[in-house]
Length: 339
View 1 (tube, helix red, strand yellow):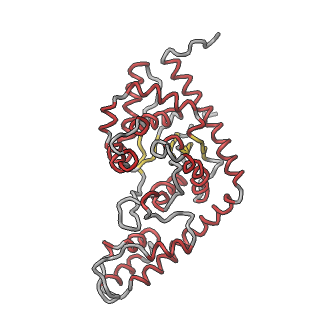
View 2: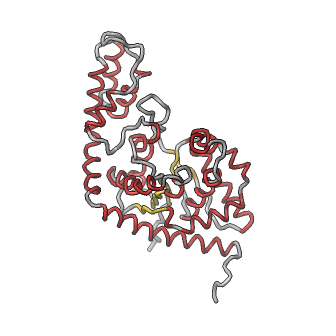
View 3: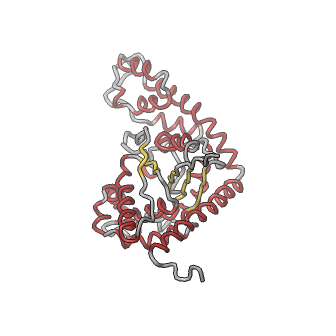
């Protein structure tokens, strides 16, 4: 009998700093639903990483742990196929972070484009003094990835420097201690970053420009009615420019069968902004309604969500322990093995 084919392993995750929005949905969650059938998938609730810039607000992190798990279950991620786990409950990740911190210089971390960008965005938190924890989070992320011997890491283009940093750490470790760790590959999804309601290139929890998967019909209506449209268009009869209109942008996501007609009517002044927004509201709500319904099921069963996290964390802990055993053996730190 032929050996059963071993699935490649994926590691991905989210920081529990707020509920997930449609940017997450189109940017990564849809992809996770598809990949769960093709790969062995581990999804990390990165609460430790969330504390790097929320260190003074641990309650915010704690209350959002269940929220982001429920969002993922609601879009179709199957807990029987995927392992959810809490980063803070895997001490091996912290231990690997300490070991890896000897393999990367401060100068190298400061040159990481993703880190530089995020530090600039968080000046209101850090001022001119960035914490050791935040500067070093790529090292912690390398520990996340290697703890679970992951083959592939789904990321957007902006996250590629973090994966390269991890690959560098793996190569350095293996060159010193022998071939021990797997060098992961980035998995680039088809969808790119989704813009915010205000036209910002990023839809973000902290930017106030997001449509959340859990938003009510009323909340979605209010947000869409405030979305940025063509500033040059004053009257309904004025020809519009869909290329600068966020409503048209979201129609491309939620109204694929109608968007061509919508944009053509906008360009010749046959469709007003209010009618366009109302149609978008209807289409978004139709799309999100089954997601809200499934999320409501889990909201009424918090113990089930807790059980999914607890069981997944047990599985993840066993996997991380196997990695740590190999690492300590390679580093000659297995002093009492066999005694």
